[in-house]
Image (spheres, rainbow, N blue to C red):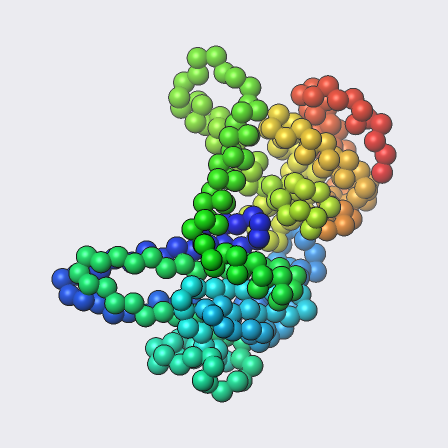
Length: 302
């Protein structure tokens, strides 16, 4: 389950012994994260630089926090033991031996492992959780992780409810179709929901909330490109006119006669001018005007 506040994930591990004999096994998660900020937010590979090694800053109570100058990430498994090593393979070996962080040499190694042993009788089931969250500092992620660890299922339920609420809100804005074929409605709804994949709601992290990126599920494509906004202009103007207006105004500051996109942190222009920009922008504004009648946008200046 992807989490919005705090940003992270809750992973549920469901085990069932389908054999006729008792089974004992180790559930383990190995962490050796690289935390880096991109040089740019445009489409493409942005992380060529060698990563800064991240030694675990805190390991206890089934948690491991890694951090460096770029940020922090915390991992947790309720009831788990923790070990650290200089490689993922070595960390797994420590888990198999039952070696714990508090009774192993403090090497400052970048890999950690969270692990639990479980014994299941025939037909018996068990559920485990792995939780992770990211943030700007070790203190912030450790605090957020503590809340998630206390009730990971509740955190997952809140994330699911938020997502379902977003979907209902989007679909409620669609224009009604008279006597539609169910197959048409399914296509209609799925097409509308594609806009959600491009939407980021991260509070004050970006210049706008929500922020609509060209590649919403790709960390290397968080810029907003004017031609991609134009491709989505019909759905955008119907489903989130306020969000579209904010993006159109922000694009003016690129400026579009010099760049093809804007990045999310400061709204500055990225890339060269594209001849397609004037058409893309004016077509998007025209669609917004037709859908909303809000002519005040024509008086905006950046």
